[in-house]
Image (cartoon, rainbow, N blue to C red; front, side, top):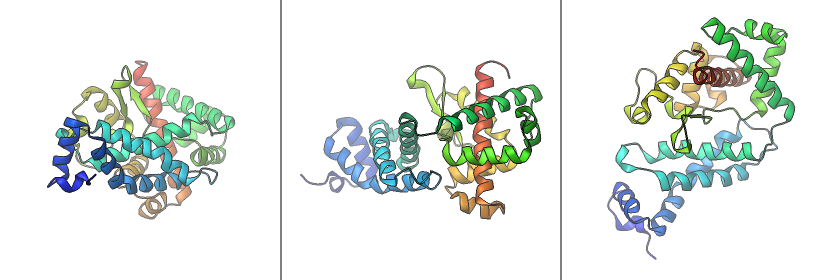
Amino acid sequence: MNNPLLEHTTEEELWVEYKRRRDPAIREAFIKQYAPLVKYVAGKVASSMPHSVEFEDLVGFGVFGLIDAIDKFDPEKNVKFKTYAVTRIRGAIFDELRSIDWVPRSVRQKTKELEEAIQQLESKLGRPAADVEIAQALGVTEDELAKTMLKISGTAVLSLNDVWYSGDDADKISIGDSIESPGSLNPDTMIEREEIRRVIVQAIQELPDKEKKVLVLYYYEELTLKEIGQVLEVTESRVSQLHTKAILRLRAKLTNIRKGIV
């Protein structure tokens, strides 16, 4: 069979054709075309994972995300497929990592304790809690808190691919879908389920400055943790801690909103 990509002038036309006919040959052509994107995303995820997590396994998980992205992509929304697919691929990888439950029980427990402490503190204070306040709430020193944060960031699956559920599976939105370029909000990412996205964006905007910068540089600018460290002039481990705290704060904030606390 001829490659269907060669039968059309533009990729945009091919997407329209695939949406209309669901031709398996077109689907296969898209899978081959965007396979390198899966390896790219898997490589980024692998850089923040323990050595026990195999790169090829991550690639395998990511392929399912690519296929899902191809099947669900809507060319009429004026969003580039690559941008849409990266989120789906990364999400599929993290979903599979969670399903195989590779995170040690002790780390999961520490993550839960830390998230609950942040949730309660920030609900009470009405602002982001400082490290010293979080440490006091947990009954540990700031140094012990930093070590715990580093341990969590090195093993726990914490990312903006965690979803905010507004109802059934059709109403789930990745927090990462709402990360924006500084200074502007892309209407394409806000058009569906506007109120939920508004809440997520507001929660991101309320993060401490350095944590917000880490999220933007990592998820929007797609820099590595090492590169972010060079930009912010801090160590890579410090960037990892900032990323972990940002995600924990977001999850705590959204949990409070869902419960009607804030």
